[in-house]
Image 1 (cartoon, rainbow, N blue to C red):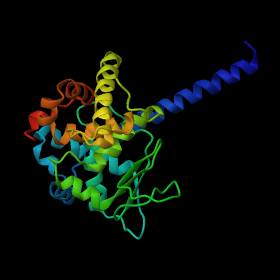
Image 2 (cartoon, one colour):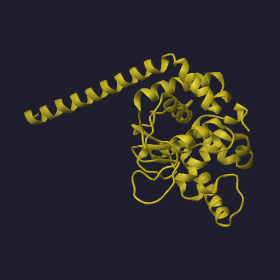
Image 3 (cartoon, rainbow, N blue to C red):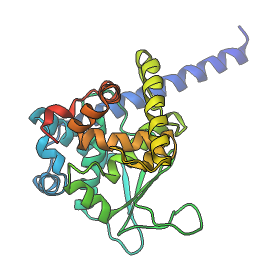
Image 4 (cartoon, rainbow, N blue to C red):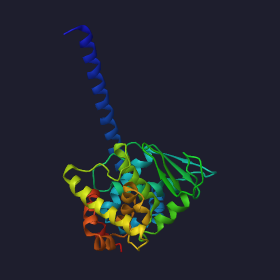
Length: 267
């Protein structure tokens, strides 16, 4: 073994060791943060602004509070168009985003570091041109949100419209670097996912083109990425109707999210 090869091997082992130590330390810190008691005022914000919280079983409420602790410790929030970010905004957004993390393995939206908040609808902050956006999600961040719509969506848990769930579903979808309507899925679910979602997406596209009334918002017919985000909104907010009208699709999302919102007594 040459000296150069030996040096390279040592460097490689050091890098692996440092990476492992970093990940171990991060996991330990997350565990500690997760177990902290959530400030009473934060819980009040959630109870006031996140209606779906009241439908969650107690163990999921407790899990959600732990995820909120970690999310707020790791993500940066910035205000725009004259908006000053408050704890109420941070907590309200975090609680809705973390609904998508309940009861399953995850990494707290791996690539996302920053959430940008506007007072209301905004122009696309990354592109020139007209527009009135309520939310945006970009590969490796940021997520951009209208506070007015965040609060409105959070306070109504039954209308199938929630901009935070929508944009953070995009983050799940974009975790592999592409927004294609297929998040990171367990191997055993891949075939069913492709078959069911492709069929349902094609059906929605056809009906939207013919301007037929559908359970899902026609915006979901834009592309597979928007379809996944739209059906995620309905999954969390209108599970009973969803499961009745689209049982195979509901089961597919149920397997992915490891949750069954039908049991939460939401319409």
